Amino acid sequence: MKGAISVRPLTQADIPAAVVLHRGVLPTQFLSHCGLAFILTYYQAWTDAPGSISLVSCQVKALSFPG
Image (cartoon, rainbow, N blue to C red; front, side):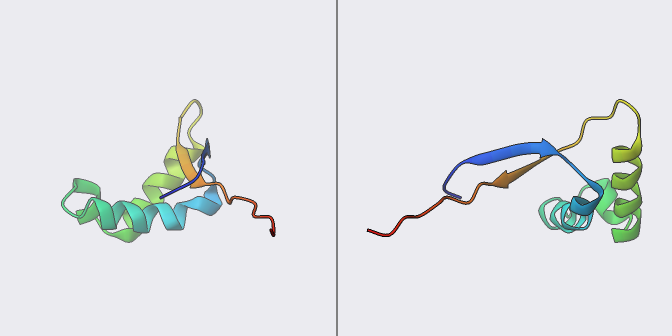
């Protein structure tokens, strides 16, 4: 991955992609064995919990100029 990375709070809109990434990157981890619906519920509960910290990193799109 090239370019700048932005870090921001995980939102409800990010959760489906986070679940797929979690299961794909950590296939032998405990939560992955519980299934996608469980991981989805876990992430939803975590982001809704007061005082919780959940972050997502995103690649920042670079501007390109002709010339």
